[in-house]
Length: 269
Image (cartoon, rainbow, N blue to C red; front, side, top):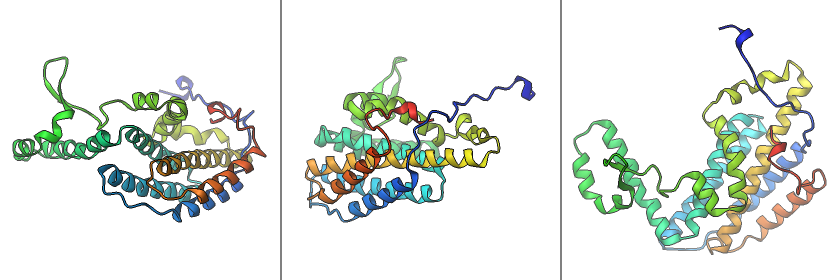
């Protein structure tokens, strides 16, 4: 095949609201520091265990995104943004039925380990199933071919179903943010070939990078703030005042540059 029979499709950069990349990254650091000052309340429940460990996991992910963005590695940061978004989606979904869903979250580790044992070809699978039968119960079913099968996720519901169940930003972000960041996570053609569209124009390449860096930072901040608000609401953290203040300063800065009410996924190319 030659280039004559090949198409490269890409939306142009024109008509994009320019984002204040440097200022967004400054506020990212302030929000990161305010989160670091947030303590955790003692909670011996199963939901407390899931909440505490998930908080640490999301915060580490949030910090990792910043390190990549400071070096302008927005492609890899986009893939980690997908990670932050899905972990946060799961956490918010668990919080709506904390007792049952926390148990499912923990029990599903049996299914993940079972898959490793099965793939390894080791003979211990029958003994493992016998020992963890009760924990596996909610994740085993008979498929349409009348064969025994296992669920692909602890929630039983798909990512889309979880996002639609939560509604609001989650439902909206699933439609576009999850898809766009998944392209980077999976190394799709449109993600990899994106770099060729600068056409050698240094200014255009820099402008495109700034826009991508700013977008990843902006939505990482939005998702992490959502997590902190929920953690405070559920009594996992004692005080979110510093985080809310830092986030408020970020929103105030952003309102001076863009109309946040009209800023939608159509701005993100």
